[in-house]
Length: 261
Image 1 (cartoon, rainbow, N blue to C red):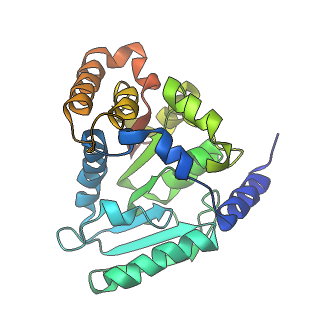
Image 2 (cartoon, rainbow, N blue to C red):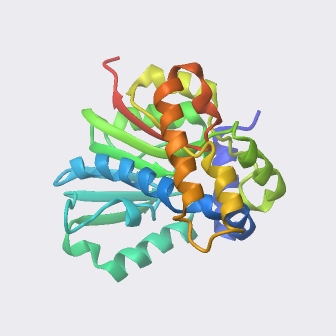
């Protein structure tokens, strides 16, 4: 069993070297964009809008670019952490280019998400994209729970492990990910429910095969095939959410409020 420290070091080394994500992205075709992608971004942005004039922590360093509109809902402070210097530099470069400092206090720190170097009850919102499945899940959640204010919120976009096309693409593109990452499954949601009251939304069940096929038929990800698949995914989520079918979607937006433990 790998220790949290060993896992963190391996993740840091992998991201400092850089991952080859090109074939992975190409494998999903139009499923990487379009209607479903817009809904995911909106779900995260809807939470971050409530962070206006508040203190926000990103586990990561770049997803703030697509989630926070600094002119419309600037936070009081935005702190971004990453264990990789290379990834952190990407965020710093983007923040300098977009001049985010004129809107809020925007800081970047090298830090292990397993050991957040902040006092209890520091942040109003903690968020990230594609980060929790790289971590020792319960350790990271305990830290998020600790640094969140009692009336705070967490929101994360994460991959799910059971989607058939997703599993195939991951198998065919081993260089696109770190060795120890674990897309979410049932046991992860059981852990989540120990610490947070959850209201999750799920994306891309039929949208994934539709997006793969769509790339060979249409030039744009906005087309009748992906639109129909996205509507079918939304209908199934509403109708069959309690059956467990949502574990077979490709992505989940996790939205949680700390429980009174």
